[in-house]
Image: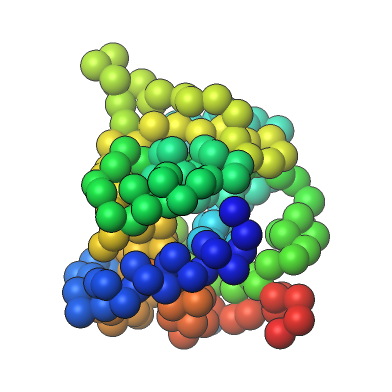
Length: 223
């Protein structure tokens, strides 16, 4: 499916649901210039964005699945509709189902060791500085999205879309008002980014809001 078609469909979803606003869920504060903290990144992929964290920064006992990619310096995290996300070229039926019907969801975890701008050379990248508490809250938020079987283990669903990556089953439900960009926006709020409640449907909405709590270190090619 072309990028133009993806964005057109996301625009339709936005128009349908624009009157509904998300709830603010901030539980931490951003790092101040004179306090220790952690740096994370937001990388735009044209229809959604991934959160990138340094794997070594993840607190002990939180988000145990990060050990599945032990040779990686960074982890990129994305979340979305299971069928749509796991289909390399989704057809119209999958796309409309993802937007209009509550569906199962997955987490997409990518491990890499080059610099973030080098790995995502064609992406806008926003650098965000979080307090240690905010970063821990972000990791808890991500970990809480995994589905756990009766033994308490997450469920891996196979290789991801690119690089060293994997899909995992999520317990959350994907729907129009809880799409991939809304999920990521809530993650930033939970981490302490001072974002006011708003509807977030497209990656353009998300990146515009994220610029308020971070700085652009790489622009989208052509911008």
